[in-house]
Image (tube, rainbow over all chains, first blue to last red; front, side):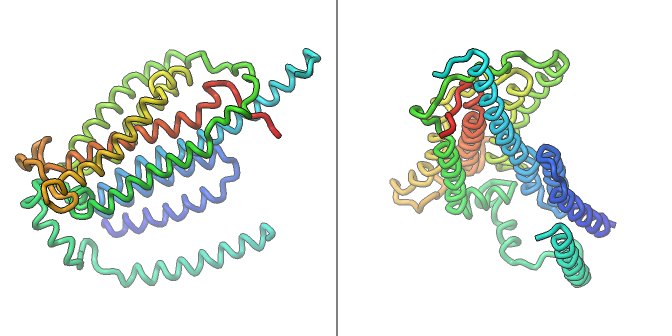
Length: 96
Length: 250
C-alpha cells in the first residue's frame, strides 16, 4: 500500500516538475514552484525523514518563492519608478 | 534550438529516465529496510551520550557539528554577497521617484486573517526552535518560520511597517552574534583543554526543553542567525521600494 502511494507521489512530482518548467509566466511559475516544493516535502515525510521534510517546507515552499517574488517586485518597481520619473519630467517641461 | 527540437530532446530524455526509474524501482531493497551500520550505531548511543531524542539534530549539531558550522557560514556568506551586490550606491542614487502608493494598508479582512496567522507563526517558530533536540525541527527551520512572521506584517501592512520592525543595524548585529555564537560555543571548550565543539554544559534530563547541553544552545544560535539573515535579505530587496530612490540608468 505505502509503496504504491510513494510511487504515485514520485510520478506526481515528476509531472509537477515538468509543469514548473513548462509554465511561461514568471508569477505563475513561482506558484507552481511552491506547490512542487510542498510535494517534495510530502515525499520526504513519506520516506521517513520528517526533519528534512520540515526544512523542505520552509525552504522550498516559503523561502525560495518569496525570494523570487521579491526579485520580481523589485524589478517591476524600478520600471514603474523610471517611467513615472520620465512622465513627470516631460509634463513639467524641465530637465534637471 | 527550435521548440520542436527541444521538445523531442525532452521526450527522449524522459523516456530514458522512465526506463531507468522502472528498472531501479523493481530492484530496490524492500520498503523500510536499512543496511547502513552507522545510522544504527548513532541511533543506539545518541540518547545515552547526548540526552537528545532527535537524532538528526544530535548529528547536525554535535556528531557532525563541524560540518554544520561550515554550512552556517555558507548562509552568512550568501547573505553578505546579496547585500554587497544590491547595496545602495550613494553616488549613483537619483531623485526619489515620487513615492509609489505603498502606504495604504490592505483590506480589513486581510488584516483580520493575518493577525492570528502572525501569532500562530511566531509561537510555532519558537516552539520548533526550542524543541530542536527533542522533535524534528531546530534552529534552521525555526529561523525561516520566524522570519515569515515579519513578512506577514509586510503583507498586511506596508513596506514602512516592515522597515520599522527590521531596523537595519539591529538585524545586522543580531545576525553577526548568531553566526559568531556558534563558533564561540565551538572554541570555548578549547580553553579548558577539551576538543573543539565538545559539550561543556550539563546535559539535563532527557526530554526536557533545557537538555542536551550544547545541541540546544547551538540550535538557538542558528535560529537567531537564520531569522536575522532572512530579514536582512528581504529588507535589502525591499530597500529600494522603502526609500523610493533608484539608481539612474547610465
